[in-house]
Image: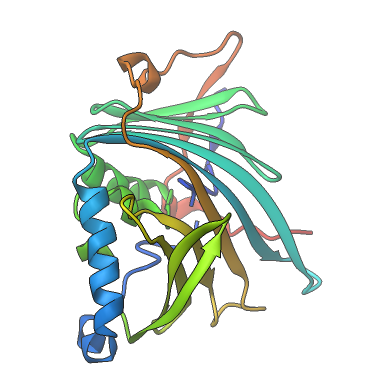
Amino acid sequence: MKHRFFFFVFILLSLSMGNHAFSYEQEGASSIDPTVDKTLRQMCDYLKSAEQYTLCSQATFEKISVSGQKLEYGETVSVAVRRPDRLHANIVGDLINNRFWYNGKSITMLDTDLNMYATTDAPADIDSTLGFAAKSLGITAPLADFVVSDPYTALTEKAQSATYVGLHKIGGIKCHHLAFTQENLDWQIWIEDGKMQVPRKIVITYKLAEGAPQYTAVLSDWNFAPHLPESVFAFIAPADSEKIEFMPVENRVPDKID
């Protein structure tokens, strides 16, 4: 009998915090510091112009246990992007160890601990596929806003305010520190000050959730000239693996840490 299950978190860089975790409200545009807008737009244009790239994310995220205690977990995520229709992610963490493939026709997720995988047809480009995965499968990726073809638009929908905090270093790299607020969460981003205008760190605070948990990701090893053969995006089932089905999002049971 085939199992049906839900891969409960896909952290792309990875990011599960809800669809467009960084989106902010257009009506709040008057509260957006012009320096913030310029810096964010330059970063988005830099990412948007890249035909392919790879990067690594070292992330920590907090969950609230059934007793109300805040617990912190970690994970490492490596990502390969080839626009417009190739994406691969490898997630190694405390709670999940998954791999994700998108080849322009289908998406596949493999649970490397259980040696189980699920595959389903997908739209013909990264943007549509990420939307499909979030809506139909419950697989959401906060950092997906950096992978889509128009990251600035994805990031500028629901802001209430944005502030330029200053120039601060992440891993020895000088970065512009920007802080944003929106109705349900606050988030911060550190953007490299230099020719390679990439995000170096993200912090999201879910201020209305119980315990106001945080998600933090430090992004490194950006490579905009990687060797990405088709084999990177092609799934080959491991020996003795079991094919199962994605669980529809409407059947999802919220996870809670004991």
